[in-house]
Image 1 (cartoon, rainbow, N blue to C red):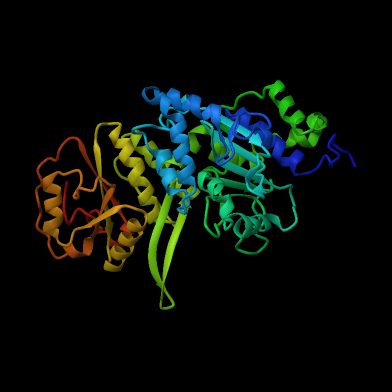
Image 2 (cartoon, rainbow, N blue to C red):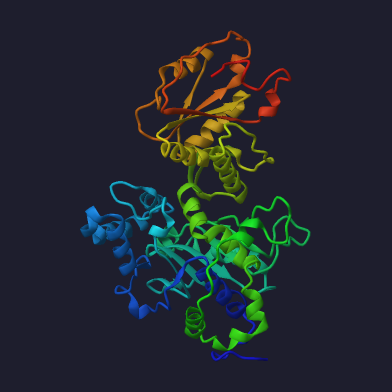
Length: 474
């Protein structure tokens, strides 16, 4: 069997998946940082967090010129935040914020620095793990990718089990888990559940958890079922830099594979691993996911007569991401209403939560303040939706009568409360079914944009009109 210079078989996970994926990342605009060894700790990188110090400080000064002397202090605060037992919530809040300082320029991808490396050890005392690939934005290690060779023993179920049993519960890994946002796992095979409901092979993603995180499939949008999805096919890939490719292979003692047919085949942009990397980690997509696709869910519920506390971190499902992107496209085309089709359990309440932040920013860029209404047709759905929104951190208002809802419309306030937090008003439309009186509303302020999200709209459809027109007009 052919051997690489490191003595390993040419056909292992490193040569078949990891090296091609690392080279593929350079096509997406990532700069290969080079190998990072433990003797570089606290000079090249911060050993507590694996943040690339020089990159972080340089980018901090670039993005915050009026605060350029505060980079070291911010780094110190980040270290402290990542020690919190909060699944990285405090750090994530800092990551998204734009004031008084910002860590990422979400509006201008090219204003950020994207780096990648492989085999970068996460170490705390005697405990360590080594992600196959780590991705950085402005020096922050925000993504890691684990790869296996095709037909690996146990499939991706084994990889999920390792994360859930050994890494997530280990408190010594808390800082590294807290700073990581998307996590991607692939054995470079197409999805196959082998007759079951849990795929054992393919490319999956999740985000951090305290105990266990479900692995999600990712299917790139492909409405015409083309051989290669449009986003993958049409992405403006950069040409592979021969010198960078040579350095990557040399750093991992794999120069000999460069001309092998298998390596060249695995460089294809449409392999399962490279596909999910493009879909989720291309700079534009990754920034979108980081800003709008993460939710912290904190709630209590009764299970078998006992109160159970839920503290979870969720990441956008691919269906929710494509719904949000489609809404963005339609709004840009001047469309003001539409339907998002969903299946049972697809997470429409979660989508509404994500949209509340995305659409707030969208309309803010047009100097408008977005105000959200979530319309349901049953009291139990009102209670359920309210709980789900509150669990994710939204301030929930309800309109208990038609008069109360109309008063909200008349006052033209951007917010009903004074907390300054994101708000949503949940309304049970059936409460207004008996009141058919038409209400004429004054034109509301030009800088206020009301957004109505109607849950299960087909159940209240009136053949002579639309769902809401019988109750109020705007």
